Length: 196
Image 1: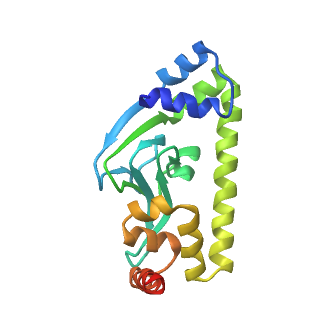
Image 2: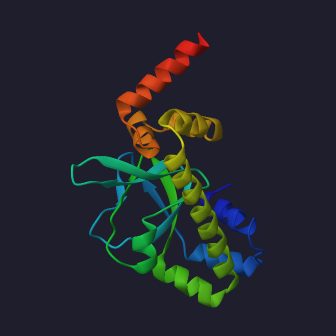
């Protein structure tokens, strides 16, 4: 299945599409190849695209005043990523969005998305559904970081997303889970020792 067929199937899991609607939708998309470490969003520039990961892995992160990285989001195949605040409000980004692996993205730009929703109103429902799911996920993540220990957060992530743990660099995972790289390394070592 090629990239545009896959995203059409993804959309059809949420809303029905006629052949004409599918064709119109895919005509508004662009397929973009990015290399590992390549940035697709940078602070100070307006984020123009909402990106669906067809293959690869991406992360969104910010740098604090001490140049410390804080990973806000990780996305692998069949997930979306962007600097949503910048994209939705069309104002300068605060996040970097970077490829963790060579990746293929399917992107829709802001103006094309607005046109799509005006032309085929059911796409408002589609974007509402994926936005609601993202919001619920972020709330669960926030509650987890406020109420669980670093070890509990790591164990929970490991159970829910074992494939991501294997693919994402340790520094990015540590920053996503709100701990130091050294501490995550200790947790991993302790876990390996317990299994032995």
